[in-house]
Image 1: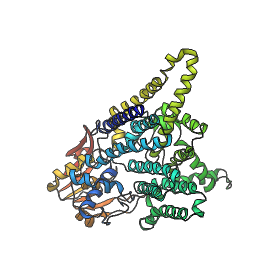
Image 2: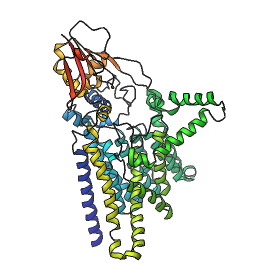
Image 3: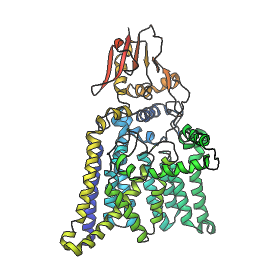
Image 4: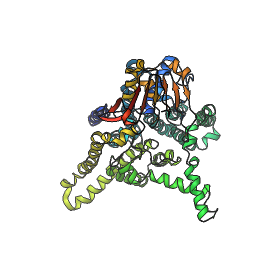
Length: 544
């Protein structure tokens, strides 16, 4: 009894320490990395503000189940849960990112209880949850307003209740499992894959009970009903973002087939089916490659940077050992954990886009659990082997040595992320830096000009004017004139109020400001410069 109380006290102290670490990692240099709000964050912020004040999103849709936004139909839950922060603090960078600070802490706790439930061991749960929250992969996501962190939290909770359901098979546990899986699906598009997985796992676990017993049939019907819920909303909102990201919708996919056929016309080999299988296989495996996981990460510099390792080599090696350990011991949940691991790359493999830390983010959870299992398996095996050569006393240093190697790679990745990453111009461009300063320039000079012409070369500048200038949602919903979708499925606001989002070839003779990038404005005509950290982002021609 005394030993158990002592063990619980140590576990509680360790958890408190991990919570403090999570808060520190998510708040350290918060205003500097990342120092800019990207357009998607601003869109979440303004749509939250719009719903708070009008119960409608920026397009005028009443309490939407999708945020139409740039016609990418963002999942709405991040905005709805951000309403309290926006209501209290207003539209600021801090307020729209505040939710993910909480999510980071809850992801730590949910990972702990999931890992403890699967393994039954505090040390595995503690180390695994440390791997989750301390990875640069997690920091890149939770330090800004991205909805995938929220989705990962709900999927982790769904997995926790699924394990309970496998043991007791009650309707209450099933409802909890499906409820959190649905929340995950309405937090981020990729959450649907995990909903399908949870429904499949539940039905497989009930087996013959789903047919023979009345309770089993009820549970099967509830599971199937939950499966269809997100797709029912698709009938109303469509799946524009998903359909535009599908690999077979990319023009390059069709052109590659045409090129092969022109060179050597064997339709049996060069067709959509064969090319699709090859593309999916290669795209899938890249998400599990050591280069993606431990070196390069996301090619989009908004989310990744070379040597800013998503996970360390030690975590990767230990995860591989962990898979071996689970199957060696015939752990009863080995197939469930392996399933979570193997479906995680699908979110990006099905798209035409390159490696993505966002669409595969939940992968960090099963990897961290397996790495924790593998860490102790590797440490114990190495310690026992070395004990025969160097003695028991020296072999005890195996665990600290493995941790030191992990920390060596982790601290190097932290150095890249906190002190180098955001100083690079290409990163600042990926984050659309300068738009906040542009919005402030417009606010300061609003009464001086009758019209502002603004370049759309790097994203959707209109959303920054709305966000940073607290523009009335009621007015914007009625005034906004929008463009048709571009080749990527996105729309742009053409104009509202005094703002026109293009640089015309013929200059307006009224009191007008032209805001463009340095390669769009004649340097001899520049009257003002809009800078970020001392670098020119926009040049302004003022026609007074």
